[in-house]
Length: 311
Length: 305
Image (cartoon, rainbow over all chains, first blue to last red; front, side):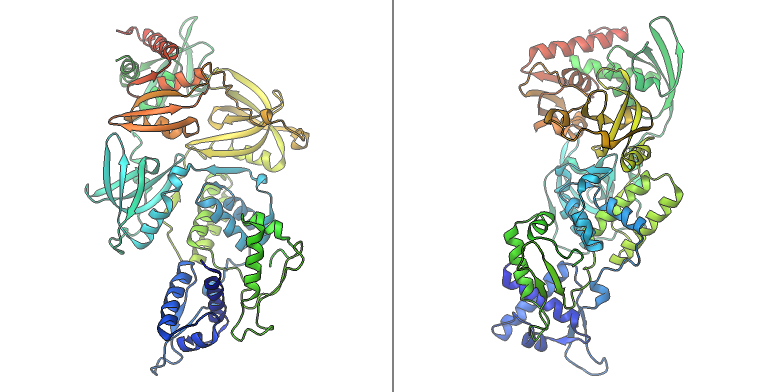
């Protein structure tokens, strides 16, 4: 943005915020520094400036002095709509907000968090970020999709992207929500071709996201809750699992259940688990120190994964 | 305004821009004000001394602007996470009320962005470790190292928890090893607060001390490795972006270039994956991998036929 335009936008904001009444266009063109040229030029300038301020989150109210007379419409920015008002914040509130704003280490939220803290408590800007207790790191491949998806959710516009599952396909989706779950971001939305709600992992979206121009193209169901769609991916049937574990090995697995000595070399560990897919990985990690005994499905899964690698 | 007396250098640092840009912005702001634009109506900023900037008359811009949607989301999601970690019901209620206040200030009841509380964030020891970080105390922990499968007991001074790709990691100064170390939170078997304070951390750490990691490297082949996986094993690529140099999807196969890592770790990780795995350009490693598969199959009495 050019300096002249920035200066004009600041002047317009100050004028509309400082006025107790609606300012008409003619008053704005006459009094606010930066409006020059023919009436048509100033008109176009003003329309673009209004859009620019709205994009920055500054709401411009349109109204007239008296609703019963056909006055020229005017514009103003109220202090309530412009200013940040979170009410009284205690030291504890500020501590929580400060920690929340500094949790992120990614392209999208790190800067947004810093800006938010600067607005709430300017002194936060000068605090050392090294004082944090916890951070969330998000890989950049997910972050790059945030802006188009959030924008599309905002305007209720459909999106199109290439998705790499076991097969690569083009997906046409009405986006409902973004959720961070088990360390990865997921998009939950209505898959138009499949006519059902689907879950997409952002790291599996390849290339860019195309946002359709049409706005208000769909409605997000009231009270939509993404969690049932995410947890539907987790198996629900629980199995009694038995593993043969070599003595003094696989301590993390031992900690999961009851241990019964079998002989001088092996112990038997038993516990309940629903996710045999993940458990098979944990068993195979220990090579020949852990053998899946029960259920049969787990044993077969482990053997199959090993044999696949020899083929 | 909230920090009168800041220098141009400080402002450039916190706004992540150049000192020239800050000077230009201050000059521009100085030229703006209420219509009329007399000296009484302009924003008044003292910036002649680059070490002491002060806004003495902000005109009507005397309150911070409302949070943008993205700013609000960053705070609400952060609070979501803190709420998930907190075990104290009073703290959870307090955090919930803060989230409501931020949402209300934005005039939004739903952001359509959320964090689903899961066991990535809710480790048995998250709160204890955060308490140790806040009070700068050590923790005594029982830890099982992933590759060696050995349990060790150690006293560490935690400096940070990081959540990355589904796992929580603890960064801490290990007294025994005299190095910064990284520990997987789900491999901590037990932990309790210790008595050492963080003041006892060495003031100057060497680069190798700072870079220390729990799993030693020890890879015998420093060159990049090419591994061919089936598409169904793509989670491996997603979870280990830090060691992946490049990846390419060729039909149903994923061709992945991996930077050198702990050899034992890599072979075990590959063994756990679904589908076929081929280590290219490194016959020694492929042979070791095949031997590992045969050993595992032998345990099931099925051999490698």
